[in-house]
Every structure is written in C-alpha cells, then in structure tokens.
Image (cartoon, rainbow, N blue to C red):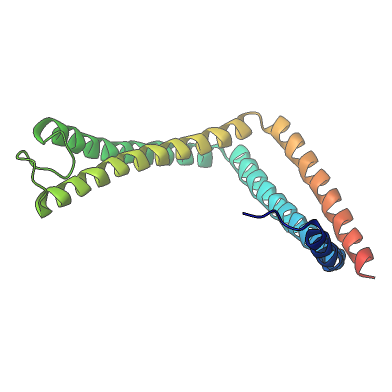
Length: 183
C-alpha cells in the first residue's frame, strides 16, 4: 500500500478548509440562537413546574384535610399495587419451583410452542413485578417530597419563590438579549 502524496493532502485540506470555515461562520449565529431559544423554553417550563408545585404545597398547607385524603389515597393505591405485584411474584415463584430450570425448554430438552408461550408469560410476570415495585416507589417518593414541602412550608416557600424569581430574571434577560441580536 502506498503512502498518500503530501502535496495532494495539502491541496485537499486547503480546498476543504475554506468552505468549512465559511459554513461555520454562517451557521454559528443560528446555532447560538437555537440554544438560546431552547434554554429559554426549558427555563419557562421549569418556572411553570415550580409554580404548580408551590400552588399544590400551599393548598395542602392551607387545607390539612385535603392532605390527609391525598396521603390516604396514595397509601391505599400503593397497597393495592404491591398486592398485585406480590400475586405475580408468587406466580413466578411457583413457576420456579414447579417448572424446569431452563427457559424455553421442557423437561426432555425440547423446544415447543407451549414452553415458549409459558416462558414468555413467566418473563412478563417478572417484568410486571418490577414495574409495580418501581411504580409504588415513585408514587411514595413523590408523596414524601410533597409532605416534606408541606411540613416545612415556610422554608419551602422562601426557597421556591427565590428560585422562581431568579429563573424569571434570567428568563427575561435572555429574551431581551435575543431581541437585541435580532435587531
């Protein structure tokens, strides 16, 4: 295999560097504006999310009976989901005890449609167990966050309002800069 000619390589790099430089100079402002718009929209969504969380915490702080209802509902839903997940767990456990130790193979070592269907349902049961556990964990962690906001509402209110104010300040300054770059 022969070495590339250094003159051809040099000429090719010179010829390609000019259009690449022009393209990068033309695209840089557009890419910069795209990132600014994206940051602004993300910041706006975050502000809206913080306001919704704050309003919920304020409502629950002002109405403890509503907080009690939400806590009771979440606990009951979690118990039901864990019970359903436990049922599937016992089905999986029974399959492990009674069934063969290999997937998709019967006791004689043959692969049949019934073993494939049975083992796919077994894998589905395992997935359902993990999904129910994950769902209950997420629900209870969300409830825990809400409870901690309501319990120490004054500190949460101070922190979240300061965060919203800071985000709104950056949000409006970014919009102002974007308008200046357009003009």
